[in-house]
Image 1 (cartoon, rainbow, N blue to C red):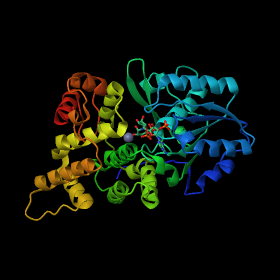
Image 2: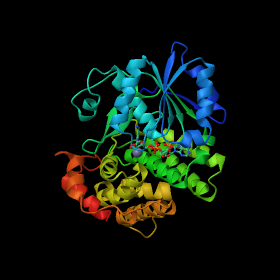
Image 3: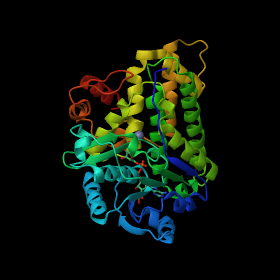
Image 4: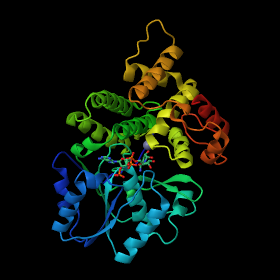
Length: 387
Ligand code: NZQ
Ligand code: ZN
């Protein structure tokens, strides 16, 4: 196990009545709050009225910034920074999913950053402070409600990039599984693939002697998959929604990666697909993860054997290690298909002639991933396996 430093101050409030806690969680020193949200879903569900009611009850002045699109855009972030500065806003409440939260986090860092916040995405600049952000989560997927990162798309050049700092971890996150009952199936299952991917990016490691986090990863994966099947049967199953919602947070709050080297190659390739084609984040991972697995499993077959046995219950008897490893990958692909998600580019009608460009943008003359370092040619080979 590697040495590590872990810090996570996010207060989690979970359950049916958790929204009421917002009134106590926002410190009384704040007088004005930026209420940040996406399209129509929170108005349709009635959540908007409940949240604004609570904020007004606290006599907070509300400045609204709606309109966050999936895969949040830099232009709206810049508008948010201006609004916060002009109105001397000291607190941001994000009501939505990963896109709203990431937009809020970037605004929070941008308000206090003297310069163009995009420079911090490209490595030209750095930041170490941000306004406090609170979250009312509406879709379990990104894990952004307790994570230290934010992912934003710069429309000018189609770059989807991330920033990371502990100061981006939200001050609190409200998780009420009831709020997720209104999710369309496609969003539910794209979110499920995303949270599974967050576990896998950590599970597939070359670090040895990481038994505890291995077991935590395996338990999280099995919990997500079991409850995903329950939601396929009955999307209104509150208990399954609750398991999925908690799993999404656990998958990406950093605990599962403690003491081990993480990979993240699949996410990097996926981000380029989103940047080019606007593809939903979870869909890109459904397509790329199986291809990545087929390309890298020989780098550490025993880890893939462990995945097959402990997550899918693949039996070893009469098979060699390679057969067991490949059976595990097949089982994972079957799960993705069971969730009505694609496992190849053509299945989702995505082009297959931009591989050079995707690989170039993704590796930037270097490499991505750590389980196996992926250089440009490797990324192209993975994309070919997803054809
Ligand atoms: O905009 P509205 O109308 O609210 O609709 C949203 C949106 O269309 C809808 N939705 C959300 N909650 C709903 C609902 N519809 C009905 N009922 C509800 N309760 O769902 C759609 C998707 O929302 P979005 O926020 O885009 O989804 P998600 O949470 O999957 O976030 C995706 C973004 O998170 C980033 C991704 O790259 C992507 O940009 N990620 C952020 C991470 C982080 N900061 O740690 C890590 C992840 O790997 C990921 O990269
Ligand atoms: Zn993700």
